[in-house]
Each structure stands twice: as structure tokens, then as C-alpha cells.
Amino acid sequence: MIQSASEQTLRKAKTLLEKGELIAIPTETVYGLAANALNENAVIKIFKVKNRPFFDPLIVHIRNKSEVKKYASEFPAKAKRLAEKFWPGPLSIVVPKSKIILDIVTAGLDSVALRMPNHPVTLRLLKMLPFPLAAPSANPFGYVSPTSAQHVEKQLGKKIPLIIDGGKCPVGVESTVISFTEKIPVILRHGGISVEEIKKVIGKVSVETKSIRQLTDSPGMLKSHYATRKPLYIGKIDSLIKKFGDKKFGTLSFYKSFHHPNLVRSEILSPEKNIDEAARNLFSAMRRLDEPRCYRGRSEAEIILAETFSDKGLGRAINDRLKRASVH
Ligand code: TXA
Ligand code: MG
Image (cartoon, rainbow, N blue to C red; front, side):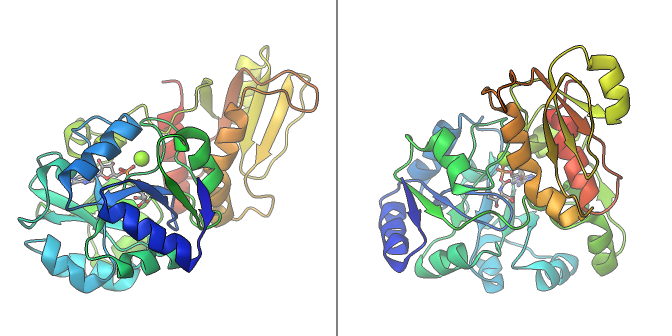
């Protein structure tokens, strides 16, 4: 059930979480499917509801920076600088875990991903709780992440007792994941904080979002992820139309519009060419293009043609999601 984020709703959320139930929470990136991170049975439910493999570790959401000492056994100086600069915010920091962190949360790894989210409702809730929240994105494993309470309701509404409505997620792509388990910090997932911004604070980082390593270290980076049910192709839309334009298609573009007799739905992410707005609108647009219903009386799109963004700033996170959603 979707409920607006009143004090009463937050009290109900607290009671449910204390009983080991799951609830959906808004964050600035995407909605999360949250459980008491210190309750093993509650965390198991997350994997069941999402149909998520147990080898994919969860992010632990904390209410303030000083909580790090409880859940990390080490917090290197550079990690601290990032937390000072970007928390609360869309950055998950992977560090050696403390003993209280359950193996089920980290999929048996010795490290834990910590994040202080930047959403007033969830921060308020976290401050009411004596435990942190383990929360992956609130979507079935492998599908596009939810950026509104309605997205969650559609797919998980029947499986969880409460979805707190905190409005549309202002960032719209997941947090950046950076690991401090080796000498040089490694970015494992592109997300809401860009590589450029991170480098400004800590200098050299390596980026390993694609290697085989990720299949075990950060399975959220599996090649096929964030996927629509309809085939999605990524590239220059004009060329894609030449190749696939014999089918009914939808387009997903930054700001350009296209014309073609088989174009049945067009999603423009930011007419003003604003990359933040584009990221914010990405997942909703992907979901609309993926819907089976007719659009303006015309039959549905069979395929989705998506534009490649320029590989800088948030454009990298957008490209990453589109590539993983695409036929490859
Ligand atoms: O923005 C977000 O990060 C959202 C909101 C709800 O906070 N959460 C999210 O969670 O996207 P999820 O589970 O969909 O993605 C978590 C990512 C996965 O790629 C996972 O493999 C990686 O973080 N991860 C978690 N713990 C890790 C660890 N100890 N080492 C390496 N990667 C880890
Ligand atoms: Mg996810």
C-alpha cells in the first residue's frame, strides 16, 4: 500500500521494520526495498521478494557519518574525504566490514557497502531506528529500477505491506559504488556522483565496471541488468532507424525528436539538454516505452531505440544503464 510520508506513516514503518517486515523507502536515487540490516530473517526476505541471487550483496543505509565506526572495521582517509564531501548523497562506499554486519548482507564478502542517503523522509526514518537499513533497489532482479512509489506498487505492491511515497526521485540513477578494499580506490558502478567529481576529491581512481571481476565482486554490474522486456538497442538513433525501422519502435533520446511512420512513442529526456534532468527521467521513460499498451491509438512499440550519451559526468551512468539494458 502506498502511503504519503506523514509522521504516522513513519511510525508504522518503524513498527513493521522492527517486526522484520520489508517496506519500500524513497531515496534521492531510486526507491529501496528496506529491511533491518541486522536481522537475518528480514534480510532473507529482500532476496526472496526481489528474486535476487544471494551472491549479490546489499548496500547498508546509515543515518549519519559517525555510524561508519559501527559497521566498518576500517575507513581509509580517502573514503572519509568522500563521505565528508558527498554524504548524504548518491555514493556507496565499500570498506572492510565490522563483525555485526551479517554475511547474508555482504554475500559472504569481507567488505560492506555503506551509504547515507539524501532524502528527508528516509533520513527522518533512519533517525527513528536503532538499526541501519539494508536496501537494494525496489524492483524485481534485473528489471529497471523504480523512481516513483507507483513504479514500486506496480511490481512489488502485493508483496510488501508499505510503500512510503516520497515523490519522484531527484537523481534518478543509482548511487556510484566505490571500493576501498585495495590500494587504489575502484569505481565498481557509475552512478549519481561522477568519476570527475570523485577524482577532484581523492585523485587517482580506477574504474572496473565491466571486467569479469565484477561478476563476483559487484554482481549489480552483471552485463544484462536494468533491462526492459522489449529489446532495446543503443547507438545513434538515425542509424538505428535505418537498421530496425521496419518494426514499430519507440525512441529514447536526450533532446532530439525523430519522425518516421513506424515511430509510435518518443521519449525525450530533457528538451533543455540538461543531463541531471535526463538522468532523473531515464527510468520512467524506459518503463513507459516498455509498457505493452497502445499509444495514441497506434499499436505498441515492439522495440526501443536509445541514444548513446556523451561519456562524461552523469552521461556515463546513463550509458551504463542503457548498455546493460540493451541487446548485446
Ligand atoms: O542508489 C542506490 O544505490 C540504491 C538505493 C536504494 O540506495 N540501491 C541500489 O542497490 O542500487 P542495489 O542492490 O540495486 O545495488 C547495489 C550494488 C550492487 O551492484 C552490488 O553488487 C554492489 O552495490 N555492492 C554491494 N555491496 C558490495 C560489496 N561489499 N562489494 C562490492 N559491491 C557491492
Ligand atoms: Mg538494483
